[in-house]
Length: 181
Image (cartoon, rainbow, N blue to C red; front, top):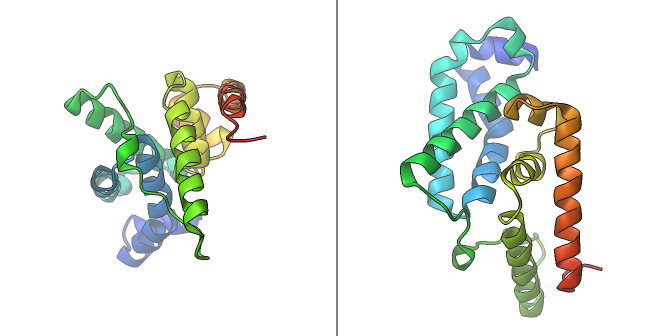
């Protein structure tokens, strides 16, 4: 991985490979926060534009943690987006677009899945900011705890604690709604 990142500083095909490896994770991170396909696509594109501009400036210690560097840029872009839009509500349940499994589910399964997904997202976005951020970076962005700690500039213990508290809160809410057993 380090070699690929180092090559991407001057080799377009290596950069393209990095893009292919991480674009879905970055998009998923934005989409989980915004629940808007167009905004998620725009922020994903903006993030990769920044990466393309700044990859040549990567220090050797940053090459080793490219994913952390990438998601720090993504989180900064998200913060700028919220600041510009002055968004106070991070989710619009009506615009929910579920990614369905490859097999064709029944209409009942689709409705149940959407309802459950809506409830989960509703409660994720009701969590305190730190808990929401670590959960979305972990499960939508695919980052490990130590990577989340680097992105959010907090300790790994704090990350684990916030994930645990957030998941516990979600489980309590969803159990009371009978979304999960």
